[in-house]
Amino acid sequence: MTDAQAPAQTGTNPLAPAPTGARTAADVVTPELVARLTKGVAGSGRTANHTPFTGEKLADLPESTPEDVALAFERARAAQDVWARTPVRQRAAVLLRFHDLVLARQAEVLDLIQLETGKARLHAHEEVQAVAVAARHYGRRAAAYLKPRRHTGAVPALTKVTELRHPRGVVGQIAPWNYPLELSVGDALPAFVAGNAVVMKPDTETCLTALWARDLLIEAGLPAEVFQVVIGEGPVVGPAVVQHADYVSFTGSTRTGREVAQGAAARLVGVSLELGGKNAMLVLEDADLDKAAAGAVRACFSSAGQLCISIERLYVHEAVADAFLERFTARTKAMRLGTSLAYGADMGSLVGERQLKTVTRHVEEAVAKGARVLAGGVARPDIGPYFFEPTVLDGVEDPMAVCTEETFGPVVSVYRFASDDEAVERANATPYGLNSSVWTKDARRGREIATRLRTGTVNLNEGYAPAYGSVQSPMGGMKDSGLGRRHGSEGILKYTEAQTIAHQRLLPMAPSLGMDDEKYAAFMSRSLRAMKALRLK
Image (cartoon, rainbow, N blue to C red; front, top):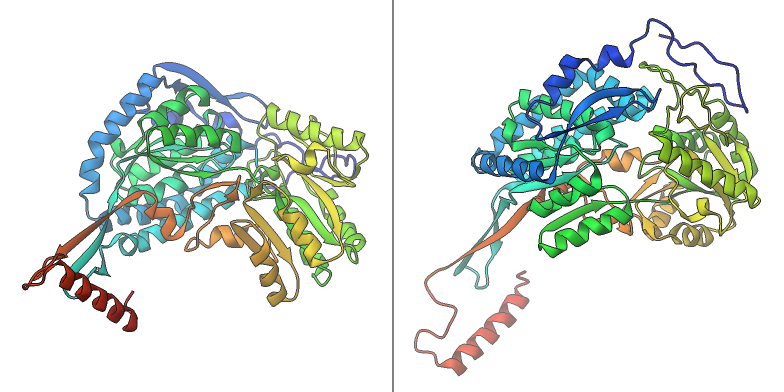
């Protein structure tokens, strides 16, 4: 389906809203669907969610109280023991079946993601890809990650040591609105296959997507009671989740992440946090400028910039800055904005009024203090209530808010640098450390610069997708961007408790065979020297 073109405004060629006859919110979010997805959700009150495309209500939903949260944990805890005793390969098989179901029925969830977040369909598909990759990875590798491991004991041959991994119990997960499939069920998959139950609090405005994923996991064989969902306001429901959880997984703002960490620490339970970012992209003087400009559009404006790992600071070598910006701004101005539930739009909407206000404030303040708008810079209520054009700002300096605060919208600031050292220093000059990007034709130079950037992931010649999509490798933030990692071994082992079982055989770890204390101490000292000489670990 091709959307009609609206007249260009301030250089942008936006897609018009979906034409008459296209699928609407009412076609997708039917009363029957809502009833099916919310079945079993603990909630004695009522709330609703809305679509950013028009602002209209999507569905009436059950609203959970702290008492409902406690009940959800009670149900999950009762089911978790049986689930934990299910062989790991059977648990993993659920993930592999879920993988197939997600891909087979992706059209359903793409509609929901678009309606709940306002993002373009291609950006919604990033979530389908990420969840499928995570399901496949942990479905294939969980048994290896969790298997008992033999270690060298205190006294080789006499001390037999085995490391076991036990599920933590019931994981409390607080998921954000910006990636409602990937950052909800995508994070829950390794917790489930490790033998845990999960009580999830998705954002109310995007909870239908998370509930759809729960419904599909149950169809794939996950016991329904093992996966509980609670819905409600973050300040009410969030602390209740932290209060009852055996481990907490949180994705969201740094400010709220600190509160979650404090609540978990008070109970001495573990926590993983993926928090904010002010991510930098470095374009070196030898970069392929056409590829870098295309990559910058993806890195800066995917999901309207509402992505923790998207780029908000663009550092370009002064020798190629003008040539790069000519290419980048042309591509930015040509982006198509739209609301259609179909492929074709290059960017969708912001999620709501709060994000629109932040983006507007950052741009208007920067312009008032001397920054120049190279592309975009205005809201587009003619397309939808929360649309804002993809925006490129030049001449941004402290103390402009957009210089240091996370915008979380389609706004990028451009800075010029003269040397690699200057670029690295300026890229690192932020409290955040989540993601970064380096563009160069010299792979060795790019890798050397990458090792100097204080971010949890670095992408060479791409913005964020290669590192995030490489699920065997850990992904997470340094500094104020969080604690812990998702993906790889760390992404599943964080949901487990390690237990060491040491079996001492034949001789005790004490004086024996007629030795007195002094002779035993001398014997052990000789043994320690010998073990070092034999290079025992």
